[in-house]
Image (tube, rainbow, N blue to C red; front, side):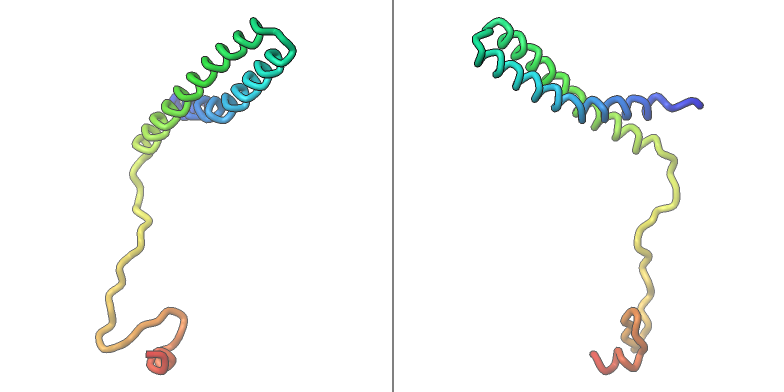
Length: 107
């Protein structure tokens, strides 16, 4: 089965958008833990990798938004599903679900 490249990009973008904040939180927590036990080099390394993960997350959010817009524009145009305007009956009040007698008593 052949999938469109837009759909594949949207799937990967969504996965990255949802998982990178988890990776970012783990890296920041690990960096804090390493700093607490006195490992300055490990803490700095985790901070730098967390910065790269944050930048990658920002790129993933923007790219997913752009690919989503392309997917919407690429969709074939079908019938519009809006509300249809109904013509008013002259001299008659129309309320949905009740008969004309009850409508006269209300209004």
